[in-house]
Image 1 (tube, rainbow, N blue to C red):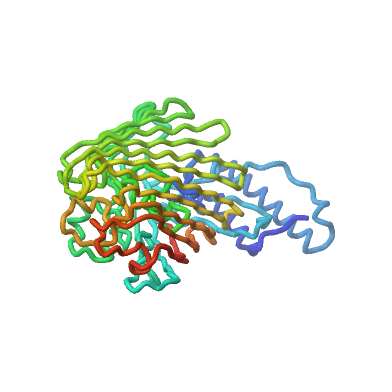
Image 2 (image 1 turned 120 degrees about the vertical axis):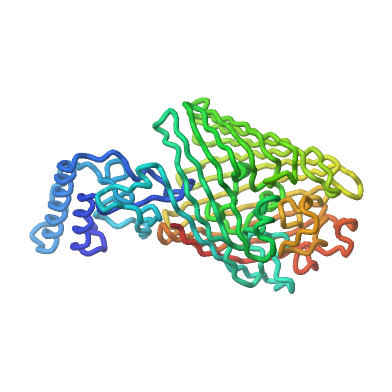
Length: 504
């Protein structure tokens, strides 16, 4: 039996006529999200669209009239010949696409349309200067509240960062970006991107020589510039130069791109956030992409680190749509005595769609730095395994779980909030006490919860997280032997947090 949409008949007809005139649109989204798509496909001639829309309206009136008069059952109404769908592939230009449907979704998920900053530049005649020229503007706002069952006196969730403050709200980020997207249909093209964010998470994305100069007060809130770079392409080659977010691991700096609002130890303490340098990648074939570049080490912008490092990448996609991504880098970084010593790091991420609704992700990290420890001169090792499982219920709801083991073998990595804290002597960032370091052992965490997208512009992510530590506290770096959690008194904690995200 035909089910008619819940909207009024007048509103539906108005939408159809606006679609036919190129004045009704749908979705433009953030790159890397499920909302991104080509909003300006090749349009059919206006005469063809007029005929297509007229037929849909005629069919809508016929079916509605039949049901209202009761003269015929809906099953007796013959289906008209198939019409060109008004979709992303054929819809007239506007702010995006509009897909017409006379049935309600079976899963009761009514997300509506995505509104983007780009739509402000619609000219009202089916054109948009920004999108027509491959420019994109957008951003997001993310705010969170985290409950810690221990109610620590220092109001910190131990070494858990991003949502690091316990039992209080945070504006994690207000993010803006502007990008010139490379045209995939051109053999040669140039582009670039700039990202700027303000919020409490700026403390964790600080680069020496950049944000540590901008945020001189070292308050809880600050400004960060995660990326500003130029890109270009020629045939199968793509080039990037400037300041950019590191391609390592499964998580990234922009929290809205992650499934959970908290981040694993692997990402906060085991991996770099940003690089400054140049990279080139080559698309070998449809399934393999390789790349290499020169960088100024980890989270470093200026001559604080005068040494150059190298980075390599490789991504392979298999026939079953599972993929394997590798990133490796070799650089010279400062140890606890502020001496430059060699560092090697690599990460592997394997992604497998188990079914249409279930996705499995496994990640392994390994890092080492020579002569890292001030007291012993020992080489430091850190490594770990992350596993994720995601279940998509429908377009509005997904469930996820993350189980992590991260080993800081010499107690070299976990505890400091600044990614390059040893490189900036005397820097004061609002975070854990400097004595909350030296945890030589294993960190574990399990995070679980849903991701709710009630509309395409809103995301809500409640999650429950369990953390615990097994190991020893190094008296050389932590003379008071403060433990990781609950104001330095416990080896475990439980937190429940949620955040509210607006995408635009």
